[in-house]
Length: 276
Image (cartoon, rainbow, N blue to C red; front, side, top):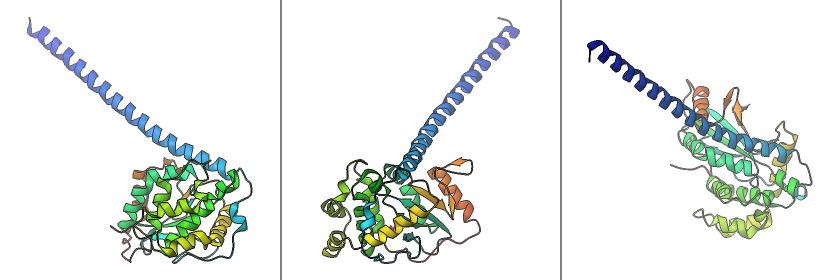
């Protein structure tokens, strides 16, 4: 074989190898896009579910709530909330949720660990606003009862852990299991030290029902279309911020951008925040 032919064969093999590498790269990119689209689709569906739920109307179980009794350390005012994280953290995440809302469960499942890590690093504090729109849409009182129980957990300094347990064990949207105080007390057993006589009494008496109603009234008067509604420093980020879709990595990036040049929070975490 001549030198010219050998060079030609080598060039052909090199071109074939390069083509295969390009095809592999395209296939890898395609798989990444498919996975990314799946994540976006789940979160997008969650947003749609929330919008539908918010616009359905109906009588709300919290309409018959009693006097307003704020949970320990709660944020007062027209938009009551339960704070978590370090109070002096430079950024604030406002989360409007309903414990019966499946879209909220999807959000929590995707972002819980990221939020906890940002809180632990002093980069972010959160404010949880509790709504009861599913009770009004589907009937029942599980949204109200669960929100009251979460406020009772806040009194015990264990809001975050119990909040996470409620979402991890959330029943189907049409199953009003959280309307049963016994179920809520049973789940409290998953949080060390929470199932006490004081907690049980708070749950069974509906101590914070009026506070939950006040929070839900604020939700109904707001500009939000459904739950979850999530804002970073007052700017909506669910399901997206500007042209970027929300994701754990993007949430970290957005917080980092907002905190540029600012010191992380060092104050003791709010009662009920995770400790690490």
